[in-house]
Structures are given as C-alpha cells and as structure tokens.
Image (cartoon, rainbow, N blue to C red; front, side, top):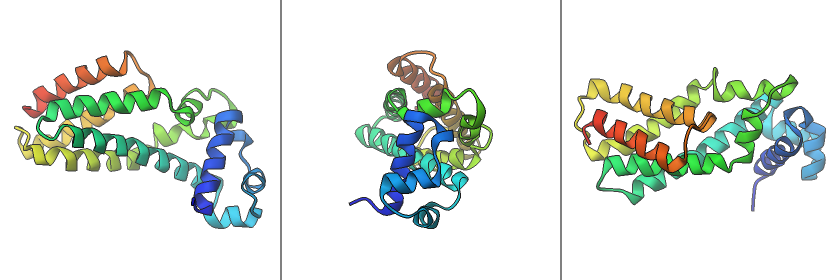
Length: 186
C-alpha cells in the first residue's frame, strides 16, 4: 500500500498532467488524497519541495530503466548503453509528467522546468553515479581521468534527447552507443 507521501505526490502528478503546475495547491492535494492540508505540509513540506519529490521520483524510475538495460547486456558495454538510451527515450516519450513540464510555456507552469535544466546539478550527479557504477564492471578501455568526462557527456546527451528528441529512441540509442563505444574503447 502506498504511503501518504506517495499518494500526495501521485495526486500532484495527476494534477500537473491534467491542469498544470499552477493548479496544484496544498488544499487541492489534501482533498484529492483525503487528508488534512496540514498532513500534506507535514508529508511534503513546501510546494518547491513537492516539485523536487516528483522530479526525484521520476529520476528513480528513469534510473531503474538504466539498471535493467545494463543487467540485460552484461557482456557488452556498447549494447548496454544502446539499450539503456533506447529504453530511457522510449519511456520519456510516453511520460506525461515530463511532457507537462517540458511543454509548459507560460506563467507559473515554468517553475518546474529549471529542475530539469538550469538547476539539474543534483539530478545529473545521481544519474552519473548510477552510470559510473554500471560501467565500471565492463572495464572500459579508457584511463580513469577521462572516464568521468565521458560519462558526463553520455548522461548530458541523453538528457538533451529526453528534453528534445531528434530521432526515434532506437536510432538515437544506436548513435549514442556507437559514440560512447568509441570513447570508452568498447
């Protein structure tokens, strides 16, 4: 059974995807979840903290996809990267919360976009840590001083394609895997 916090975050996601971030209020969340407004504040804190909780929840789902893709390709780093990118972009394509955030173009609805762009430092670090941990067992043919910049490049390029796809997930995954394979010596 979902915790009260999880139910509040899920209700906020539903409100955002149907009516935008400006429609999310603590009172509306309390009503949707069937708790008091004080309970909403106790569980998620402020509205910016709620936004961060939603983004971190989505990040966990995206990184779970990365983990599964690497698990499915234990012997080939390039294929693991390709599958990971393809699966992440496929998930992103159907992600209603991501689309609501990225397509917001006016007023208060743009408050969430910096969490994925200009203020995305902590998201990037978490993503890079996961990728770094998953790449290490493959013993890539790159010196340690260049491994971190290579991982940073891959994560940032994938994030760019999540935000604004330029091709199909399959094609983009193959292209990024090819590049990463050359850089990582895979």
